[in-house]
Length: 138
Image (tube, rainbow, N blue to C red):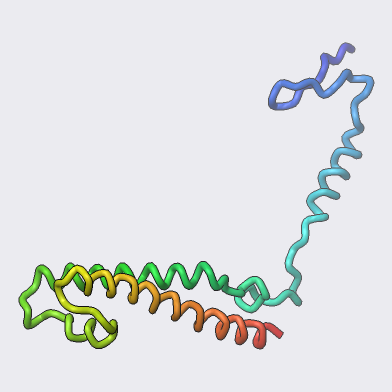
């Protein structure tokens, strides 16, 4: 009986029938490759307390700085579309030194200071979080 040359699903030749790998060997190879994958055992730590939960200072600080900056811009936009009795410009003037409502200089100072407050929050928060994450991962 004549066996044509075997091909895989992509149409590539698997070789002539005389040089075929026995089916038992191929099963062993596939099982060995699947079995070599590392699976978390019952003694593995849950994912939320592994050391991979450490936060990156740069990423979190940038994210918080951008969040406070967007919040500042939203506060300014809110103040421009609502009546003065609903404004929060007095709070912004207290929290952001040098900020004056509806001046270009005040806007620029508030823009920079709000970004810096967010970065500061990230720089303080991340080391504290990482300390406790390491401590409780044991």
